[in-house]
Amino acid sequence: MAYVITSPCIDVKDGACVPCCPVDCIYEGERTLYIHPDECINCGVCVSVCPTEAIFHEEELPREEASFAAVNREFFGVRVSALGSPGGACDVGKVACDHPEVAAWPVRALN
Image 1 (spheres, rainbow, N blue to C red):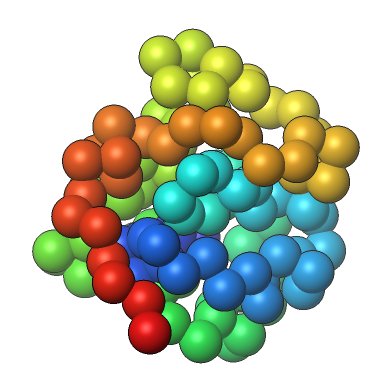
Image 2 (image 1 turned 180 degrees about the vertical axis):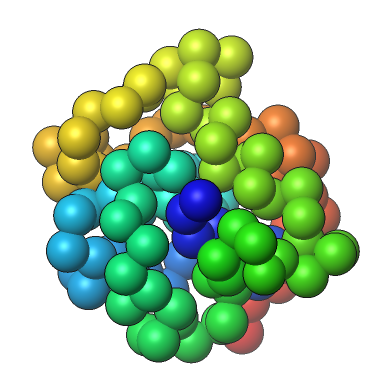
């Protein structure tokens, strides 16, 4: 099991979690961030710094955010980004796509 980034991150992408991750497993898509489930070591540091409270352990996802476990996992697959398991986000940079569920999410107006 891994940590999962959920809908409060969409169109916000604060990014406070990225430099705190000791294994560099938080990747940037167009509208949100994604945690690679096979690279995450379940340390929970990202949860403590997320200002939008968008990160949950997969086993503790609120029911309305449950689909984001699959969103984070599928983002790395061949049908979405085809990243596979690159072993760290810093060498990948921003990915020019999002999971279809995120892409279809209503655009959030930011102040």
